[in-house]
Structures are given as C-alpha cells and as structure tokens.
Image 1 (cartoon, rainbow, N blue to C red):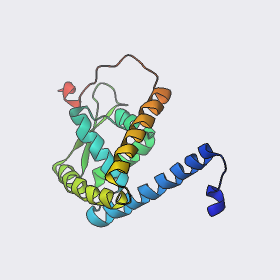
Image 2: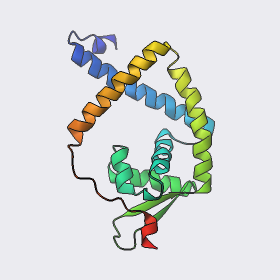
Image 3: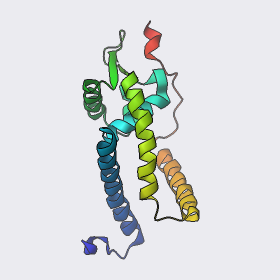
Length: 167
C-alpha cells in the first residue's frame, strides 16, 4: 500500500493522505461510539446538528449541513426514529418537508455520547503536541472557510422556519 502514498507531487500526496485519514478517523469514531453508546457516528452527527438547529431541524437543511443527499439522511432518520431517538413530523403545508425533533432518549444519548466522543478524540489526537494541535486547528479552519466559499457561493439568507410555525 506504500506505493499509493509515494507520489512526488505534494498536492496529490496530501489529497490521498487526506482521503485515507478521513476514512480511518470515521471508522475509528464509528466503532468507538457503537461500542460505547450503541450510536453510529452518522447518528451522532445528526443529533449534534439537530441540537444546533433546535426547532428548525428539517431534513433538507440537515442534509446540507452534513453534506448528505436528502435520501441518505432520510434513511438515517428512519433508523433513528425506530430506535426512539427522533420523531419525524411531516410539514402540514408542504408534504415534501420533514421536520425532525429529538426525543428525550435522543437527548440523553447525545449527552452521553458527547462525553464519550471527547475521550475518543483525545486518544486520536494524542500524537500532537498542544502547539501542533493549535496549528492544525488554524489550518483546518482556513481550509474549511475556503472550501465553503468554493462550494457555497454567497446567496441571500432565507428566513428559517420551525416545525412549530405550523401550530
């Protein structure tokens, strides 16, 4: 496998290492969360986004924030609803729009999993010094902002609804 990562071109080497590392980190987080909390990494991320959006957690917006297509997110939400972590509510005025509300069980899983994920992350990043971690954070933030500008050109912000607006 070494020959795959032995490119002379730094950009290709970084790209391949980035891709490979992303897969390993995801597998590490997934296996750790499932073993500790019975929650997949994808479900954990959905709960985090739901907490951030609050009453504004609709499937379309969550899919955008998680960089998933709506069908993939819908499947994840279906599994989460079966586990009692979320409740899906179809919009009464636009049947295509689905709201997701975190249940008390989902809130409890998120709280417990958040603590567990910090332990996993500390193990994962223990190879870095504090200075390296600070530099890594700065570089990732810079890359994320640049990628966001490339992927999401500025558009006028829309007023966000809540499933409570239906009541």
